[in-house]
Length: 417
Ligand SMILES: Cc1ncc(C[n+]2csc(CCOP(=O)(O)OP(=O)(O)O)c2C)c(N)n1
Ligand SMILES: [Mg+2]
Image (cartoon, rainbow, N blue to C red; front, side):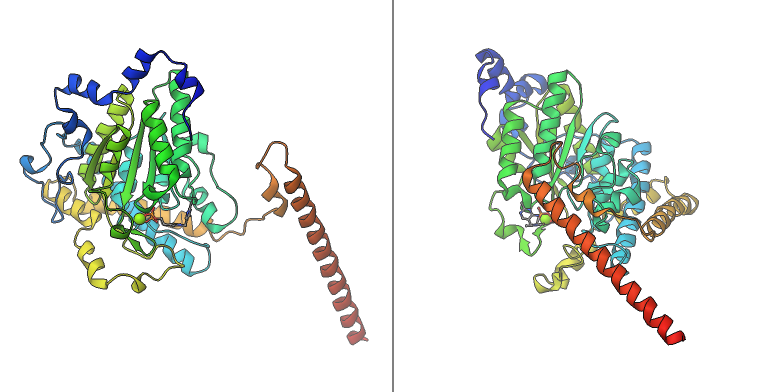
């Protein structure tokens, strides 16, 4: 995506003001350009793997990287979604094994990132998810069965993106970042205060579209939070073979935007960091990049065998950092979670699982010609040709089925004589 015409036509002073978010931050927060742009020296973490709150001095108090603890209401809402998210992941993996769904890229172990991405946004904001982000889509309010339509292979997507302001889950890596940037640009031109949160994985940061999305968003000073879930692998490729940048959050600096890194299994820190990024973007600070360090606990999808490229011992290390159990301990110790409350939440999660089982067991009639609808408002000659080929094939199929049934009927009449 080359930046030209419109932007070049803007007065130079306006362009300069747009292109100096760091300068803005220096005057707004009284911190150095480096403190604003560069990620904190360590991942921001508030609650450690054992479920205890870190001392304030360890939470990330570097200038420009101070975060406040989310409210009890926010934490309980997040915990409920974490429990539901884990149940959704396990249920969907089971449905794939039962042949009721074609494929499921599980976010088991990444639920804190999923939930925080949805909860940090306001109603009018937009979320742009990847194929792995079904739990985020549901946490944003999209119907669970409609969310899974894509993965059952029934249709390109099962929900109306405009209804909950959630883009369709993208399988081509990073195309959703460009869609998100486009929506943010449109919102800015209309004078709306919409923020876009666009998600991608660690491997996706090597894609050309990643560069184009970040550069365009930075130059046009757009309200986008790029949220990278670094789950350490791009299918079988470990992060060390993907990038030698000091961190993926550091990539932001090259575009002139601030980057931050956070413990992706600590939902308390995620809510704080993403919440602040969304707030800054809404206030006009331009785009920001947040990298969450997490781990893909299961295989890439059901079509992958993770034992071929990683050790069980590595996976075991991450079991101890589980986002759900650490939050359970933290909330129980704070007196916010007890057995009764846990039972109510478990019941809600079970209700979603039941909805998925029942919804995905229903036979959905599919119309093959629908493949060609909604692609272009005026179909291209190629699409017309393919549609005619399909129609021909379906007609021949129907004719041969009719001939076969007539023959079978005649055989049984003969046999009955
Ligand atoms: C443009 C494009 N290139 C390649 C692929 C094949 N592909 C599918 S998933 C994947 C790995 C992506 O890894 P990452 O971005 O880390 O996301 P994760 O699956 O770990 O969530 C690749 C290479 C694709 N879907 N799209
Ligand atoms: Mg990855």
